[in-house]
Length: 389
Image 1 (spheres, rainbow, N blue to C red):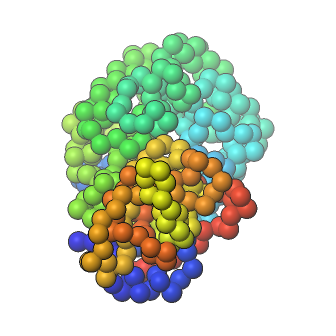
Image 2 (cartoon, rainbow, N blue to C red):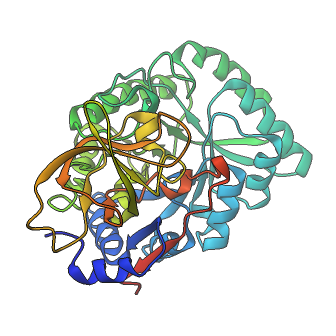
Image 3 (tube, rainbow, N blue to C red):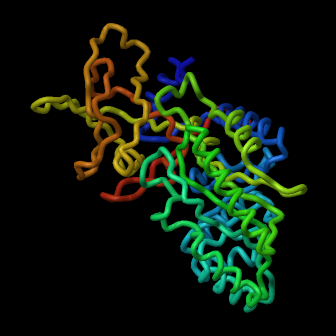
């Protein structure tokens, strides 16, 4: 079933474009399904705010009882403002500034995910400065190759993320000297938009080895945080509007070893919010190139940078319900920004387009609006929400 109806078209035709559209009913359903399969195994979900930090998106996630995964001090503050309990907030990120660390300490968040030996020393010093103890999880690099875009892998030897195995001995030697730290967890995250469960299986097996090594050397963890990374179906958003949470959580249940009482945490972003959002844009001009047709629209890389940055695919569809008599044509869908990289889709076959047509760029609820910029002094893109509870 298509997300958009003739009622949507008539409504959108009266609005100024571009704008983001969010279906909160789909978001609610997605949260219910994710919670169903996570709860089956007693797993805990933390929503990754970097995917979408709009308050209207955060509110149903808070209501669902999920925690928050933050990667900046401002995300920590946004999570608290949105109502996430501090005891459910984790703070990751390879480059936390002193100011950001102090924000996490002042909010008494559950845990910092620490990514280097030097960061351990900095957090210890700052915790001593304010007279507190910081709870930490060690983010380790499991050295796992995954089938995704090179820009969104995070668990290989040449990524900047995580503590590599070669540093483990030095880490253990240092910990007794850091008196304002409490190590509560072990953490990994191997990348994003991963749809092949064997990647998660392989990560579990490497993570198991690392956990056992630390335990053999006297370091035990109450919490295991395995990150997120579950992908969504960008090509068929209507057929597969909800990610495969069943197989995802089942894979970790089968392959992740844990000791009695150890709690397992996930940091999901895209899988929870991507499908509920679309970018709505209007055709400004149709232009004939030497070998191709261009549809120039009023949204561009300033509103949705993923195609330019990752060569990412988003399904693009014409919203006009009365286009039945139009012949098909292939277009590059390009924006108004003064860069040749400003495109939303290439070689997209659509009913023949004309000025004023409305297009929906699907599966844009994650890493869409939150990455928008003001380049070319573009206006900030607004959002509308439907099916608000």
